[in-house]
Image (cartoon, rainbow over all chains, first blue to last red):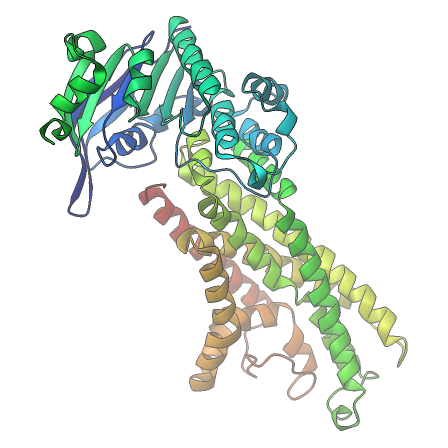
Length: 237
Length: 263
């Protein structure tokens, strides 16, 4: 399977006078796990939202195989997403939430049970979401992201709320998906976990891209945490 | 479009609020009709409501369409629930063409609004006929029932579409419902007090005329709706006016939704 090439071209996004992302450029390759790293407020989530058509860029562009998200054919199937802002209807069961999504992206209902099994939520599938723990909700988000068997995965803080076993499972999953040729873009501020997961990194701070490249190039013999602190303002504390 | 329609139908099927809205509409239809019949039996109201009078009977039957407010709420909930529970993100990721999402929502809302009114008006009519048998013979032609039912389902359909539009403009569910109900029940009524000519152009005036309450009962008889004015558009003109309001709301909501970021 060949994942999509994701590209930012001088992307800027302003909310009034606040600059969320400033002149972001770079490419995310298929076949590797790319980490978009940065502290809270760095602009990671905004950059992802622009890529996924949820927010309109103030200038520049965010493209998937050369096209904006809105022009990608069957984007719901081709691009799997796990976003912090993605919600589920609390009064509806986990399975029913995924059945709604399956209808929306034109996936067979049988696939819902497959992904619920993959994220080990089969037992809780018929429980209403309001009874789910944070970790269960996060696993349901992962199930939603995998529902269309996408060639590209975009994940925003996917390890939040997961227990250590689930984090190891997630790491192996992302690596195996990338090894199949898929594009995997992960946004996170959990540096220790990302160091074990990603091949390429984008380091952002206060809306600016501070460094990008392979993790070996960016770290230059340091740990990811040391490199991150040196690159961002954390290094001056 | 087909996939968006299927998703919208599933959302309504799985959410318990949908069944609550149907139950609420039925309850309101029954209570409205029976309260008119019951109050007509009070001695001092005898001159206003005579159940032997065909116009009054027609008014009783017309009040069974009162559940239309729930059709409006259904439309509002269809839009606002997406923002209340942040499911809008998934909806727009699955179908990034926002015009298609809005159109699917409005089509499903139109059908569901029609169903809300079909069921609640039907239940209300049955209750009214059964209840009124205690006092008088309910002698209305089938044509009257069909005419009121036709007006009722049209009103339900248009109001549900308006609800979707209002819900996408005012994303807070509580605020959207409060504003809509206050507008229909209070603001338009007050506007008519100060400018009587506005009555026939108001949403509520159009609803009343489509439901044919005042036109057939005439001045003073069976007037249940404070927004009524003697100077009303005919049912067909009001129907067109209501559709025009629905279309206007739909266009404004669609254009606005295309410009806003999704959180």
